[in-house]
Image 1 (tube, one colour):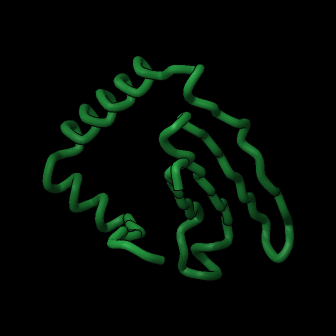
Image 2 (image 1 turned 90 degrees about the horizontal axis):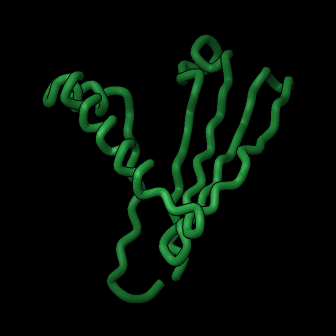
Image 3 (image 1 turned 90 degrees about the vertical axis):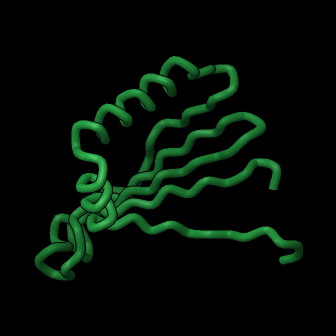
Amino acid sequence: MSGDRAFTTTIIARDHIARIVDAVGLDALMDEMIESLQDAIESFDETRTHVRARDGFHYREPDVGLLEWMPVMHTAQATTIKVVGYHPSNPAKRSLPTILSTISVFDTAT
């Protein structure tokens, strides 16, 4: 890599969400979320936003699980892919949450 461009990964855990809720209050947080969703819906442009059908794998080995990906591209801006893993045995077997997800955003120019 060259240049001064910094790449970062942000991990948001349950404790982070709890601190946000404690700091701003659940009602204020939900009001902000609803407003953000309304803005996104109102500004949606189907000629510039390309949403692909969710797809994935459902499997039974080594444990029952589901892995899905949900891609969307905003023309000339970014491509975002959300990947969600659902594994009901995680809490008991691995001390992990049942649902784990990752959202990756890619600049379409780079």
